[in-house]
Each structure stands twice: as C-alpha cells, then as structure tokens.
Amino acid sequence: MKLITYCCIVFLLAAGSAWATVTVTEFPICTDVSYQWWPAISGDTVVWTHDSRDGNYDIYGYDLSTHAEFPICTAADAQWFPAISGDTVVWYDNRNGNSAIYGYDLSTHSEFPICTDVSGAPGWGAISGDTVVYSRGDIYGYDLSTHSEFPICTAFGCQWDPAISGDTVVWMDTRNGDYNIDIYGYDLSTHSEFAISTAAGNQHAPAVSGDTVVWYDYRYGNGDIYGYDLSTHSEFAICTAAGEQSGPAISGDTVVWMDTRNGDYNYDIYGYDLSTHSEFAICTAAGEQSGPAISGDTVVWYDYRCGDSDIYGATISYGGGPVVPEPGTIALIAPAILGLAGVAFRRMRKG
Image (cartoon, rainbow, N blue to C red):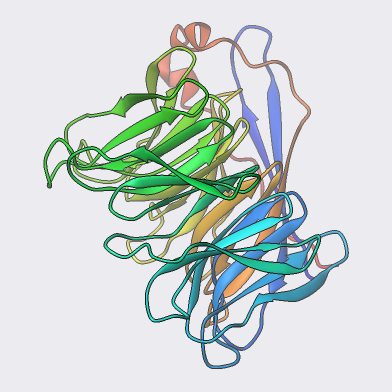
C-alpha cells in the first residue's frame, strides 16, 4: 500500500508561540478499474456509490481495520449516495422504477426499506444514530427503533439535501424565493425550527457536527465555506480563498471541502481546524479530488489521479507546537508578521 505523508508546519509568530503541525497520511481504499464516487464514512467503515463494475450502480463498503472490501447492495437498477452512522447504511434507490430510501444493517447483514417513494425532489438521505432524514419536496424523518416516519419541515417552497447530527437537522430551503436558497435547521428534542443563514446569494450543501453547521456560500459571487455556532448563534467565515470552495463536511473540530484555488478544473481537498483557526492542504494530487467526507481523524474522497474515479483516504494528526493564541490576540499582530506563516515542507514516503 502506498502512503503519502504531508507534514505542514504552521509558524505562529505571536507571544509565546513558535509552531504547530498537521500531518496528513494518505492511502488508497478502492482503485478498481470501474468508477467509484461519493464516499461516506463512520468510524472504521467507508461506503461509496456509482460502482459500475457489474453494469449498474451499487453500494460497496470497506473496513479500515481489516482492509476488507464487501458489497452492501447490488440490487437491480441504481443505488446512489450512501450515508452511514455506526452499523447502519442508507442510500437512494431506483430498483422499483421510482426513487426510494433503503437501509442495511452491517451487524445482521440485513436490508430493509425506509421510504419507498421520495419522488419530486432529490431524495438522498442522511443518518445519525436511529434517525434517518430525507427529502420528498419537504424534509421527513424516520425512526429506525419504532419504524415510524414523521414530518420535520413542510414549509412553503422546496426543502432538500438534509444533514443530521444528534438532534439537529439542517437543510437547503427556498421558502424565501426560488432563486434564494437559504439554510434552516430543526431541533428534534424541542420540535423547534430556526433559520441558520438567510444571507444574500445562495447557501448550499449544509453539514453538521455537534453545535457547528457548515455550508458553501455564494454571497460574494463565488463559493466560500462558512460556519455557524448553534450554541452562540454566531456565523463565521472558514475559507474565502480564490477559486471555488464547495462540498464541505465536518467531524468535531475539523472541516474539509473541495477547492479549485490551484486551477479552475482541478479540485483539491483542504481542511480547517476550528480549535486553532488554521487551514491546511489534505490532497493536491494530479487530477481531481472531490466529494470529501470525514469521521474523526479520517477523511475520504473520490479521486481522478489515475484517469478513472477511485476512493482514497487520509488520516489527519495534530501535534507539536504551542497553544494557539485566542483570535483576539491574533488580530493585534501586524499583518506583515502574519504573512510569514507558511508551509515548511511536503514529504512523500512509499510503504
């Protein structure tokens, strides 16, 4: 197995600060001759879709602890866009000629239907624990423990592309106008809905982990990454670099996304540590890297470096260096000094 390790040393020239490191160790997951797209990850399990090795689109998985690949669903027609939480995988399914949501229990190797008609809107689902969420024009949820469906948002306009973490559900919403996509949320424990971002332009593809929601945002004409702290009700910019930033994912304090800063037709994967307010590159290999997902310290994505689409992953480790100053302290440092921050080296290793 080929490992590629990047060691980024970020110099922080502030009172009491010298350096901090982020180490990225990359590895292939699936490089089959067919195409693999849109991975998702929970713990040691990676799942992906659009694997056309047998002529249609199926769902496959990979155990990072045993390095074993396995099929999850190879039913007729197409299975798309899997999501995973613990031992449960869910996906968007066309086997019956209409759009549906199906699930699979990895511990019992059993498949089950969740919602057999999500026609009318992008129907792919998301899952956290026993709760599955999906769109059929509105946002609905399904409780795996009680086998019951329930509405989450049936507001005016279209609601779609939900994400969930614990009791928090977030989605894209056009209630304020068809050409004005906003981000809304819902607390399952209090049954209360709330706006997250209704800024100018469009806000797309929200993701959530704990109290932090992230999305990509067109308020300034190109895609940037923004975040929102549910505990403080405060919004903040994460990445407003040149080019397009899109498709964010989040786990804990780490945000990842796809980024064209190195070329309009060459997406790379970048990350950001919310605890240290520091950005770093994850993968800038040849070809395009897209669709990142993250669980803990492991990031996965689909990758065109070899011409077709493969699944790759990387582990992120933070280490060394001092405690980073609070944002207020950083703001007092002269911009010329901050401009000295940079990447020290990139190291490649074969193993």
